[in-house]
Length: 316
Ligand code: CP
Image (cartoon, rainbow, N blue to C red):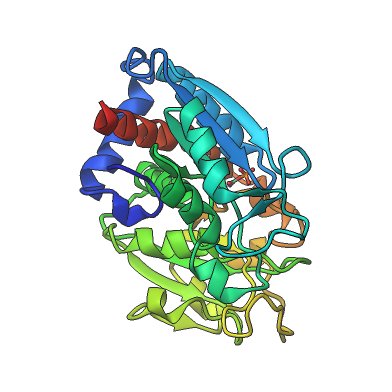
């Protein structure tokens, strides 16, 4: 694996997930692999879990890590070619990517969707810019359309807690005051193709995800019916894909409540975090023993470590 941009950069998903389980058992087993190597982490958006778990992953492989926030610290970058740079952007991605490639051995980038320009978001302008004009492996810390590290951690958590061979997994939309990107939901949907699960999606009308990703997956607009006998409820808000980045009005209440969880097969509740209590999900559900959110966040470290390990092995 030369770069880690999408889940399909992973050659053998079963083997990769098994590798994450093994790293969790022996996190310091490869601590010489990253000796004298540096991970550069560029953040165009805020983070708690991704930043800290990836730094911890690097540390457990013996790597140094350096972090730069572009939310206020870095020069504003220009990503388009051929422009006359009289606007706010002081530096072009061509120079920026080439320069940072000299300082690091692996470059990790977080750059959310703008939700303003669908074409640019789908083209993954920022992370692809670093990939195209840099010369070192690039790792996705959540891009415009994908959060593959989160999906790896989610898959491992699901495997740790599943009680039946083919669990029923429901990805449910839930309300949020702000319009949010599709990256987490997209990558979760992609990951479900790799696992032996009975998978469906529940969302209100107007909130269909990119149809290229959901082809063949059962989709319900009735949340309560979708929850029946579910073993895992994975919850996430996302904005509309068709009416890109908008929040069409929703007729009924889609918050995940303890009452709705009653219809499930005592399902586990999953969410990538951060989560707004009593907006997305009732606090009672988050605080229940069925909530896996802390376990998911813990597995982020081993998912990142497996990705870094593979990138380092490929580069040597
Ligand atoms: N789930 C996740 O990526 O968390 P952060 O945004 O805090 O990194």
